[in-house]
Amino acid sequence: MGFRKSTTCVGKTSGQPVTEYDSEYEAHDGAAHARLHYGQDLVPYPCGRCHCWHLAPRSRQTPSTTCGHCSGADGRPKAAYAT
Image (cartoon, rainbow, N blue to C red):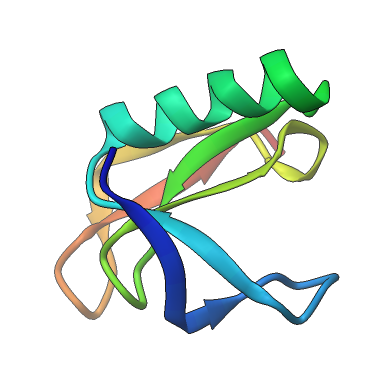
């Protein structure tokens, strides 16, 4: 599995380096491992800072979709939220 502790990204609550994954698949595998062995409900998300994947508690994730019409200053599509 391609994971390691990040040298650039830290957890918002812990302040400790987060685990980074090379692919979405590996991040999903890491989330399944955390659920099975530690009872943690984590979801993968892509990081704009390091361009790897991290895990976050499902309760902290705000559901969104990618907007097909709007883009940010960086040219990437913006996220659209229900509210």
